[in-house]
Image (cartoon, rainbow, N blue to C red; front, side, top):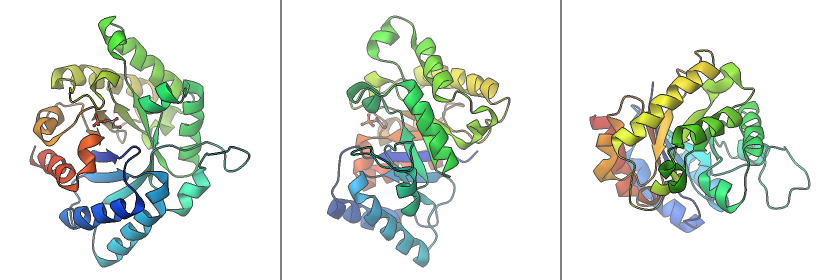
Length: 256
Ligand code: 13P
């Protein structure tokens, strides 16, 4: 299984800053095919990033993919402020992050909406990265696995073997943007559980589904995390905003 190292920039970087970043980052990952790399800029910078990436791919070999941070499930309609899968298709977007905890907590996204987005993304050839994870309160109550199971069962409901077209990101909410990552053992416990769950739900068709860890991933902790057998890549926030740090995380993974 090829691991996926993904950057979620969240609400950071203008068009100019995005182009500046790619100018530095792309040469560092030229001809690097051992892992899949994904970058998810904000919507306003997607088109420019897409053009820049296409141009780079005409000049050399890059295994870098473009991601969106969110998507609505309908193709078009009266949905003020939303972005459709067709709009992402037009920009050659390969991945979409779905159900991020910030979308769930700040924007009130529920599992059935997230499930609709997962279906629509797959239908339009965009690979969803379904995010799940418990809050600190839930962890302290000892219900982490129950929370994650519920999010996965509902988020992937009705997919069956199509789970092979999805990646999962386990992002404990208490580890996001706090500098405090889950220990490799804490993460591995949940990843192992997710692997067995999606194996059951997909009836064994989960060998292409990567389970990413997210939450304060940085060059200093990437190596110990990626050594865990059920951690198949990362979804990186803050540390991905610096092209050198993001590249360092990639090299840590390659060295393991
Ligand atoms: P940080 O890496 O900033 O903790 O963010 C993680 C995240 O939410 C990625 O989606």
